[in-house]
Image 1: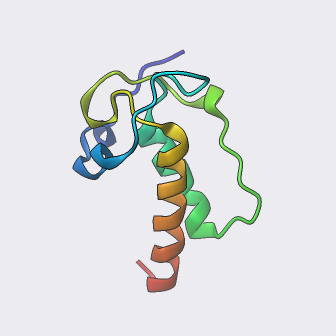
Image 2: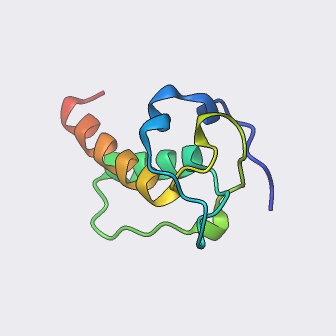
Length: 87
């Protein structure tokens, strides 16, 4: 699996996500998960699915050991909120 090198690995607000060092989401990039969730939220998708196997790994920055599940959920919420504001 590839490693994520995107800037979202250092977004400060991702520090508030819960830690996740076990299970299927271990070492997956929470920043990538957030962005996938955000895109789904902007579209207001009604059937949500996060494919953890498609996410690159990341052990750097604020996403280190953060939950990709929580990141996706936060991204979805933020995307839905943004879709109502037109941002």
